[in-house]
Image 1 (cartoon, rainbow, N blue to C red):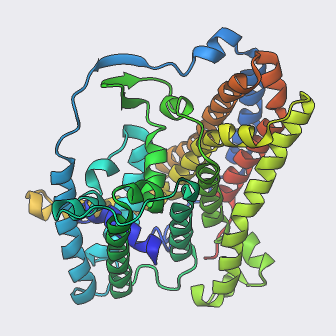
Image 2 (cartoon, rainbow, N blue to C red):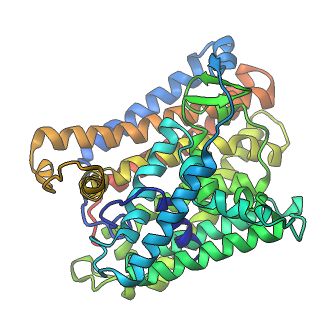
Length: 452
């Protein structure tokens, strides 16, 4: 429930999103097998080249950003957040009283299309839009407006664990809940989470938004991949991920959260495939709906994180053994941010077909209040070879480029950890193999037939 509301709030800011079927994908466009094999081979070649050939001086400097211009404070976020909160209230009322068709009700459209498809994708490309669009910023400020000080101190040892819990709940709603787009159910969950967010801010102050709200934390981490960022009172431009690569060492809870972003994204693709349904004993051609696989999908969701963390940890440990070094926990945390480009690349690729369709519904919701013409919703571009080829290549490129960026970030972090280019490269071999496997896995998911 918690996560569901997070999404709702998140999307609250956009007046009227889209199809609401990011939660129950109605459009599946399978990547041709030859493309995913070619993408996998390309990732292997690029990985070997990047690790072995990059000069040490370039490897050390490649994430240094270029200072563009000075920047004042980002004013107006409270105004935009207030507008978003009012929009969220309206969307909740429509969830209760409006049509229960999720394709036409604004609340599920805002949640599953506007936020999860479009805002989350924009975070990693253009920066932290969610800072402006979140209705929870003004929620966090409300106690202070009434003269209330935080009642409790948020303990440092709690880290980001509350946010991880809320993100897992969101994942359960997205992948396991039998009716994630049902407007009145979603309205109750959005309302519940908004109240929970307010309670967290009353108890712990605005710090709760950064530590306890999972989707806000995910949005902020993706935003740090954007090439243009405001840092040190100036706008700076660099290689995507430069801000994340130069950030302080994350705590253990945040490092695991970063891995969970990849784990949940992967399972979001796996749980619809014929292969997964075969594993859980379900005939995909006779699929009767989500209610038949709730326990199996929930188990898969909960296991995906530990399995990924274990594989990732073993890869790091193997690399340390190769160079006869220790410091496993420090390496685990230092290298975790390099997983985010893979998670973000797969998010873009996985939801691209849905976004192309639901974007049209989003336009039709935004058009009337802006006095713009509506469009006729079409899926005809899925039936033409030239447009389908562009979509396929875009999906493969998102996954492979995410992998390449991950390798660059990982190698730069390894140089900081181990001091020399050679030791860093050797320590990265097992982790590079892990990332190559994950790239192949992500491309295989896009190429696999689905029955969900």
